[in-house]
Image 1: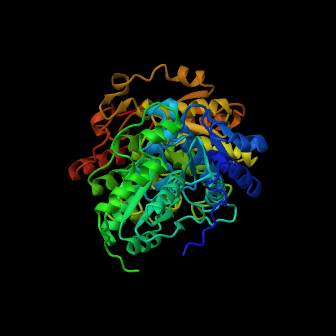
Image 2: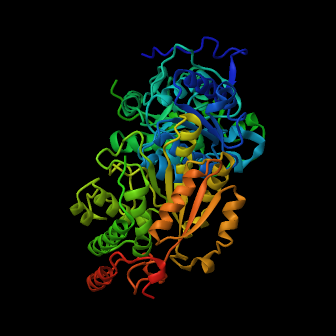
Image 3: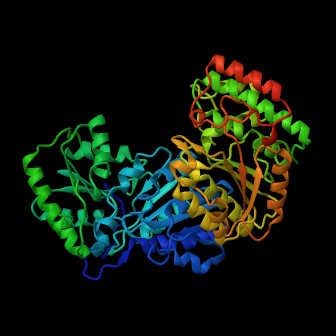
Length: 332
Length: 288
């Protein structure tokens, strides 16, 4: 049974909505207060990435590198080598989009505890269009040995995740979104690197979501319940290491699986869950996200609708899927 | 702390490094000969005179730092580390072999004493800049210096110039870059592949103090690093003019030796050449 404490106003009209990146900004400032070795670097996007909250508090521990993402992460590697805990922030499109090799060689292979902060990931960037809507980053980062990959679901969780990676002494990646999104967790909700959380129990299908898509899955589960479909919702904020036990337990229980992410499903959370299912427990699977295509300009809500990433769209897909696929491996 | 050899001793040491490079590469059957050989005088001067290091305590908190940007020349660093006592010399012959701590390109996590992981070019300078930034601005440590060696072909990489701008902006005076200006890269001469000149002008315009030296003249190398440490308002770059393959006449100046290891006949001949040159190398008495 899920004992995860959800925001009690989750489905109210006045539910708290905040950008996930803001939670990071708050967490970074707190991490800076807790540990003087925490330093922040930014590539000319200090306010967009919310690093200004840290920079204003600790101007002497903030390093502006200009529009130079290769330098951003390699300078961070050097800082980590002499005992600092650097948070290297930019937009996901450039960091890790531009500087992946530098991250691999000088941070992951070199095992330096640099924190790669990728803001403005996903189609939620909106009108800026496909060049700035980073969708491939989950795939790029989770394939990298030594790298921790975290996609927080809301601002509160982003704050906790930021504090957690400030202390984990490992190369780490954190993916943030630009728009305001509903806060589904509470300050008392658990967050631990490597753990997935069952937010809602169900027995017809397991819905695994990461980032802002977890909220959409909770909405979808409400709609599905009205149609007599019992969906289990599992939040997967850590993509690597993946919480195989929680994922397989739920899949074994429900016998059907759906994944949802604001990213390419190939290589993303969908890819990751497809891998562990086919190796351990082949289960009918539907992957929701961007499927081998780029985004485009539009308002975030328009894009979510267009790409089928809203609770309503997801519920429709799941309903169809549940009708057409019988359950495998149902043991509980 | 640190090792302090005299100039004649350093010349002899550089020759030992060259001999080790030849035998290591011959045993490995692959690797980068020309750049490894031409850096021998610079690396000998750094490890055995210039840097404050303690080979028995590679993590010593007050040590200077040596980074190799062009990681493919790591045989010269391994040879110097073994000579200095970081590990047994016999281990040199494991270079590039399965299970060895001496990877084809340097990996920090494998071998104590290595300060970074490199190979893909262009990221050494920025890592050095991060370290120098921490010393200068975050830790108020004035006595530690970061030496980073780069190949000249490496300067084609954009990351280098991002770092050059960064170091110039923050006036990272504890950062000392050394460019191995041997004029070759894999596809040919640097000025044909992608011209670098006016190299001095480029670095000066980025706010660096530039020193040009004969990279085979041990005294010049030591003097240049002294000047660089004395410059307290800018980063320094030493453009060290070198002869690729230095010390082995049939390898010198030939870009084809950039990425090739000698076979056993070539290695034997190379070692003979080096024996006759022991203690004599500088540009003035090049065998060519």
